[in-house]
Image (tube, rainbow over all chains, first blue to last red; front, side, top):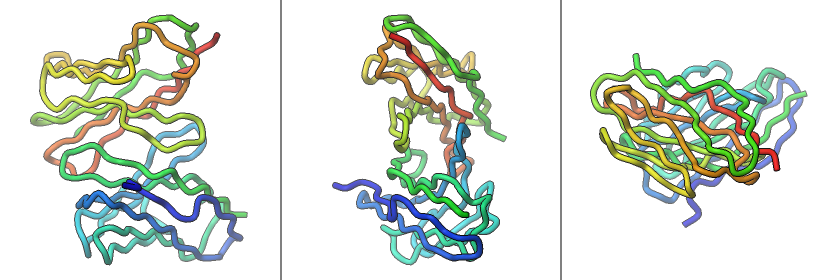
Length: 111
Length: 112
């Protein structure tokens, strides 16, 4: 089992560009999450999904969109990147009230 | 609402010292409790968990006991190593949330 995978691992964008981050899990988990982690900071939840075709806003959703068309995939989109979105992005998956399993992260720099 | 409070870091210890990282929580009902570890440049890994009162989670020499009377889940290790240097996160999962509620993280630095 690969667990939770994220692509790409690194990305540099210019302000105003768009991109999509892909998260995939092979554990048949119902719930998936996108977090951002800024240097020396904890985790902040961006969006999450409680099942295929559903999404919900987390703590810091502005500037991001998500989609969960298939149970195993959760996409995070940045429509118009800003320097404030420079961060490390982590995807996670879980079942109800269970531990979350994390991907290795995507390091995004917006110049 | 539900919340988790961790001791602030960084915590700096010498190798072979005893470690305690405090975690307390506020929650309705009977939450599950977790400790995660994040090594430099990596994602978060589950270290241990406990799902009901008085349960003790343990892994890699670390332990934590779910204490409902004190609403605590403190992380302990009897003899730390340089390789334990990392950031440790306490988290709570409850019936009222689809999410985990995270503590702010505690950076642990172990000096040889």
